Length: 353
Ligand SMILES: [Fe+2]
Ligand SMILES: [Fe+2]
Image (tube, rainbow, N blue to C red; front, top):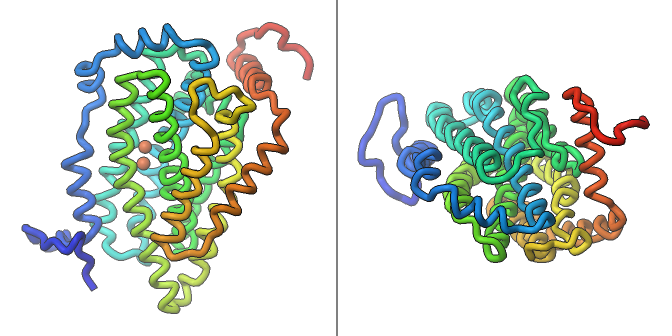
């Protein structure tokens, strides 16, 4: 069965490239829509308004924006790195269909992820003070930003690296399903989407035009990446449901990965709770509900799984009760002291353990 995107017949046909493939259409879409130019955007929108706004913001407001963008910066760098290596290898796996077109599509995904990293990295350097960056501590020009490391979000990125590397090695359908779940559903579909939602909320309280423009492009790109991930997983689930032996365990693998990542994502989102002040009015209840709806939409509606997302939201709320006494500032500072030791800078009061 050949899959047609939106029923549209391909205008041109190839011999090696199947121009009627869903992934070919997605590749074409990426070529057309994924070509925004980060440097041009900086020129066209300019940095001045964002700098002025940043200057006028209170420290706790700045922290909220900085923490959110830190999660994005570390995340974009991780997905960009895995896209170029592990994911590209996975797309050639014998168990997948349309390998050629999937590999073509992966080049667009990789390009856009590097642009996202470029946009956020330059933005943080040029507009915000960038004390959170410890770029020189790592050979890949970046070590996890303290807030990301301290809140558990780093665990999600670790898992992504682990699962995608494993799937690239084994090319086993269940391993591929787990890798695609972490990468496309959890990191892109939940984290990046909820993060984008938070950016919108923040702009209502403190409008940063350049950040806003950039994230409109980022969100559109992510939409295509998630479509790719959902379709890939559908393909694997269909084969599992047809009873093909090596695909058994695909659905369970997908569910397992959500249960693995959700608590860490929730801990990162803790910084938007009332307990942390929420100076820019992001509103954690809205954030959680948004996350729940995204889980429902992708896991249940699109993939036909049966996850109780309300139960997941309740578990997150329980967790927030549990960590109510968390002193996030202190946790972050401890991480900074640790990094400063590594970079050989003597931090004040950095004695002790
Ligand atoms: Fe991205
Ligand atoms: Fe993405």
